[in-house]
Length: 289
Image 1 (cartoon, rainbow, N blue to C red):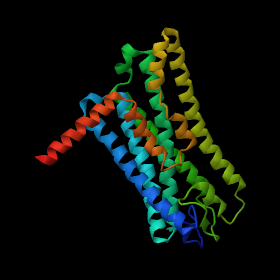
Image 2: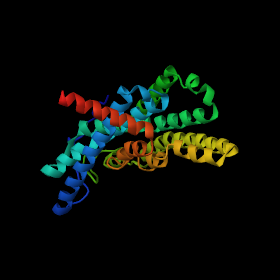
Image 3: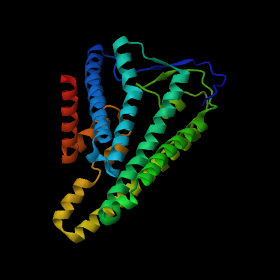
Image 4: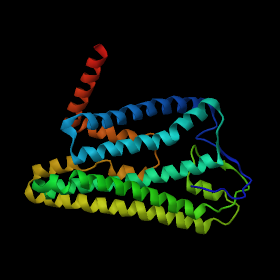
């Protein structure tokens, strides 16, 4: 995936979120609690959709994959941050940093496209309710999922292609708790303005394209239901992916955003709550027997 150039930098040092030990102890406890919540919440969504026949529909199929990506995004960075806060050893190898960037942009690009697919799913459900299961067939859902992952992979490869030959001779301090391209490029021993522009343009094209497609589908849903009834409008509003804007504004927020997905869909969705109750009951019955 990546051939290292003649770089004298073998590792990077994270400056983290704070140099104060009391603050670091608070962040350690805070991050640990949030990460455990993220893992349990998103795994619960994935298992509920996988094992409950009542949730074998296009909307929940996409939701389960979104939860999986949320879990992976958080796992990519948060355990490392927790380990660094605990040990005080805040370093990452050169290859590890590049790998983290690659996986981060693959997951981030895939998530944005998947959110667009979820908006499309709701659009079809509102506009073509009688043909919904025909249009959003298992084959179409699988194609949408594969398209999301392919887009994320291409986006990540293109991003790294811009920076693969940059020389790094020091300094090696990253003012964050994880690796990403903006900080990575600024450490290169060369003029990085053009490179930063290309990377930002690529990310902006992917994110804004997905965002506007999602907005357009949401507008069509609201306009359609507005013509039918105000009661239907309230129903449509509850069907829209309410966390959409949060995903685009905080795609790199590894602690808060991954909790929004299971929280929103479990607190607002009766089918999901019932499925989780059945799943928990089956688990308890299995433990007792």
